Image 1 (cartoon, rainbow, N blue to C red):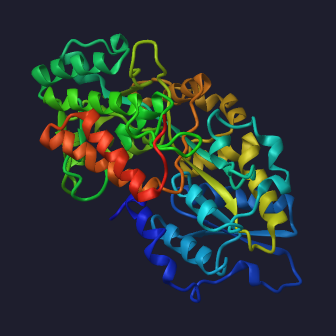
Image 2 (image 1 turned 180 degrees about the vertical axis):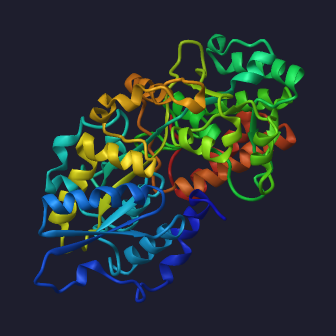
Length: 437
């Protein structure tokens, strides 16, 4: 199935011609009883919201909450159709990823409610650093509230590292990781990481983007200018080329290839985000005790070892007739530690609310990871602080163009600086944006 990023370009171009006639609208309700608000989300995150909806209803008997499982990626098509139809058929509350939010704000003015008008501004400093700017529009409006935050981690097979005689604590930079990868390959036969090199079945830029984000960079800067050919971008791609040239990057193209390599112990490191804390045990329960996690190495010596690689948020439809009630639920779900931690336990969504981390579960040992306090690794990352990532409404274009450049580097040995300079020019031509600096 195409992932949500692969669907992004489609969702924001082709489907706008479709109609929303078949969608039910919560904003068209006529009832003398309690106000009913609908929430659009996807599993397992929706399980967390459903778990606290009953608690919220007890405290607010005049509001009923209907959490609807729309699914991912279906939700992006449904939201886009509704936006294009002037807001018809949309749920009151929409679960939106940070890669989609800027496009919705820019392409459909008024499609999302400005939460500043409902009181959201007082929570500006309540969430992990780097998140609030990403939900704030150019006009200063706040178009969503942070829910999920995903700092990147460095999940590694401790048994393979031990067999190769490598001390993970000694890996401070990605250059150190490359040297460790060479030893891992020699001693265990395992590759350091895996990448979809030809990207024939979709884009695979999460790792590259994390290397950018660790440097406080991305495809665009805060002003919306293109930074795809910048020094941090070249540095990130150069590291990937070094890994590939060293023979320590496995090709994970093909359905099920990555899972098989993990099952066979042929991938020593998974540079995945906080969501993987629960996903890896579900995927490979028989590897209990073999995995550990630490913050990723820095791109350069002394550099940041933190990056928020993605996040998701709750927004309110601009056409919802129950915006006050919808905001009241969002405020309850996302700004109260006891509520958001219940959402986390039931839905596996790492909370963006910093006050939530005082709960003992964030420092508790995790049996699957050999008794390591796994969640603390990510709390420590967020305490260090991450820079905001500006996706812009042209993220889909940038993603495809950057992916093509990475494929050229991995498969044809292209020079990273030259490939990215060409990619930046192409992005400028397609988007009408100017090159930064």
